[in-house]
Amino acid sequence: MSAPNFLELVGGFCLSLLIGLTGYRRGALSGSGVLGALVVGTLIFGLGGWEWGILLIAFFVSSSLLSFYRSADKEALAEKFAKGHRRDLGQALANGGLAAALAAGSSLCTHKMWFIACVGALAAVNADTWATELGVLGRCPPRMITTGRQVEVGTSGGITWQGNVAALGGAFLIGAIGGLSSLLLGEALKSAAMLLMAGTVGGMAGALTDSLLGATIQAIYWCDTCHKETERTIHRCGRQTRLHRGWRWLNNDVVNFLASLAGALVAVTLGLVLNK
Image 1 (cartoon, helix red, strand yellow):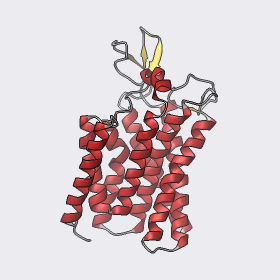
Image 2 (image 1 turned 120 degrees about the vertical axis):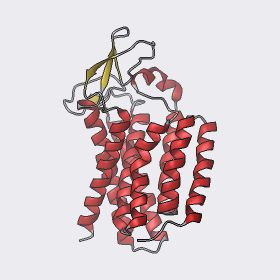
Image 3 (image 1 turned 90 degrees about the vertical axis):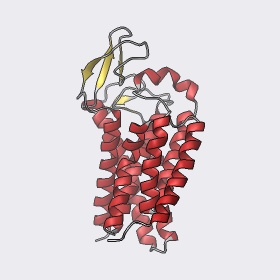
């Protein structure tokens, strides 16, 4: 066990504060989102190190840029999603909370599987974000992952080939950065290739888990005024919605956390298999 370095924690806090405030000024984070970024970033940078922190930066920067990409075309779909592109505390913890917990674990017990799990977790949330932000812009209508039935754009559990390609790109980015980091730390090419594969496969598994949960047990509501499905308990029209399907406690933030957990577990499993 190695005690956390106080200077690294301070450095992680300062860097996370800078990133959080920049995100707030750019409209990517809400006030509570800055707090979430501060907590998650300090733990990941301070307890994990730069190789962990760069994964978080890659996720935050790429997902934020894609959230603003063709935002006018996505405006009509905003009513379906629980939250907008301005991420709050819940979203920050849902997307980066597991990675922060893994960083804390790595400071208590050194093992390379902590980092592999982090790569898988962040690859999953990055893949899911890329799939959502780019998939809804595709020309082909989505189909429900469980039945293949055609559904409206933005429906939870709906997937498209464009979205899957985007998810693959998002997962690959995190896996590639993880692999490159290992090379810079002097590890063998085999280790870098394993991280690339674990991140890519784990990220895709996490994104598909998100879609599967969205299609089955995620809480989805119905607005009787607008006659539309939504993830919101209060629709954009201002009316209270009613539970249409799924479990009330399983909101989008919980689904995102479970997707990151799936990505981490798949990445670790693959890492163990490849390291035999």
